[in-house]
Image (tube, rainbow, N blue to C red; front, side):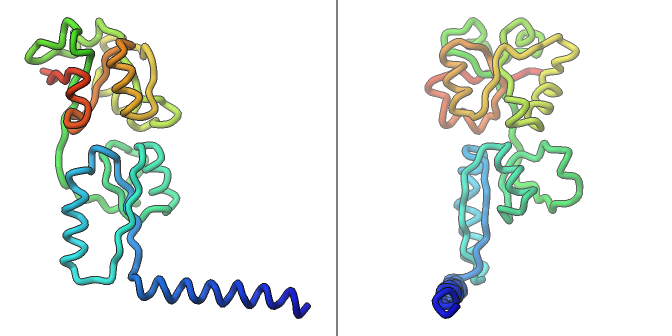
Length: 199
């Protein structure tokens, strides 16, 4: 019993040392963010935390949309910088709107629609479209279908993607066109064409 209890006491002491070190370090604020969408905002968030003269230490996690929302629901992150398109969140979370973004059509640079000033949903309906994976990103898939007016135009997925880097690769390889937010142009605009959607 004595030997077993020593292990318990050592574990307890180690836990208490850990708690004390966290107190000295400050209160951790777990911030999950959606890769490219939050890139320009993170420095502003960090600066605001520093200016607050609080004992808060931000801990950042870059995640894809589905993982981000799951961790928020499971309280594995405290704050989430993301797109607000998930109706299932309801009123259980406080929202602060910090910006707007718009969808663009994206396609290979040599695609016949790439040189246009804008495209319409009807133009897109005649092309193979890559959709967000419904299992990994159910809310984005539903939002995407609404944005494309998929049922009205009879648009069905030509393929699926699970993350934006994979989507950019699929578009670049000619697997189909896609809708992406304008903020992705900064990272992928040299590889694929971004064309505004007129309607």
